[in-house]
Image 1 (cartoon, rainbow, N blue to C red):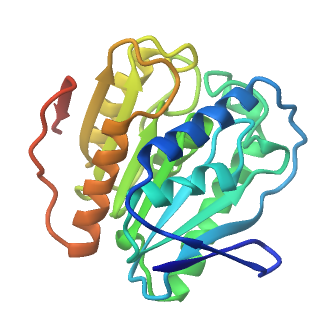
Image 2 (image 1 turned 120 degrees about the horizontal axis):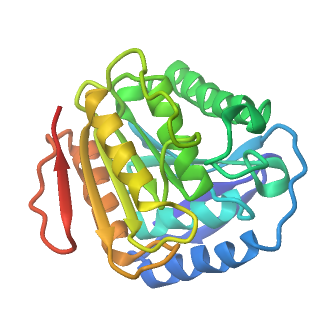
Length: 267
């Protein structure tokens, strides 16, 4: 099968989507993470998102890259997810960063960049809705800074989504930030995967985010990977694939889970 992988100039590159290229996709993300430490922030709005689709999609995924990475980097995960019925959209943050400071900094310190980044997601959802794909058929996924952005958007704009996925991520703001949000996630599947020793994401913030999103009506699953560090692993890729399979087939969530340690949250 040939998919179309297009940039903001509507030029097309063609690539073959074969079996899930999990190892290759993870390697791409790890190279992008190395660039995170070398990047500088040039605040401005995001560019038109890259997209990858087969031409027959009734569901979509918005992928949000981490600091120093790119839309192309995270869009490469679409090959690993191996769901041609999904339309994938990956906006690019100008300067390769959605906001200038740590996600643990006072929220005001990351403005106006944070609000601008959240609006990027809202605009893509609006455009998808105009094309007949409602939020309940859209999966929000982000890694690292992009994962924090995805979780924060879902919390601030609670409704039924296809799924919300934060990989090495947590809700934005310093300790003590109010987690009182309006609306309800209405049973949206929420997945948080993170290391217990991530140098950028405190473990307690992952737990707090899981509790907050559960209180907001999400069906939350948290997986903590001992000693993993700040990366994406094969188990996470497989779990996201299973969530997308459920989305495409419209089957309710509830796949059997095993290793690694899993925490289920209920309201």
